[in-house]
Length: 129
Image (tube, rainbow, N blue to C red; front, side):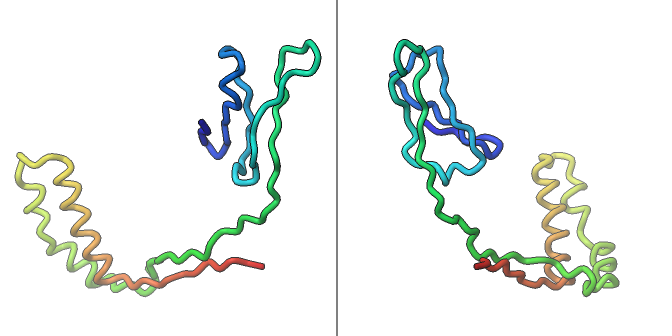
């Protein structure tokens, strides 16, 4: 079983090893390791030999696309007018609403204003090399 936590690979290496001993290989790049395992102890030592094959393949990030909001081009007059006239009372006036319903109503109003009055641009992060 391999567990990744906080960008570190934790791999219990061999179920044959005594239960009280936990041998680990810690790395922040688990994709570079292949064939992780153990070998028997040398001589009369009680510790197993840990081994792994290092794979030096270059793992480059794929091309990523993300949307960014262009606040400098936003229509702030219409944003203010729309938020002032928004139907806030429909979500907040009913005291029987669950907090999740209130938050959902709040974000629906804000997201519709953002989509309407703040333009977006797609940024592309291209692989180098």
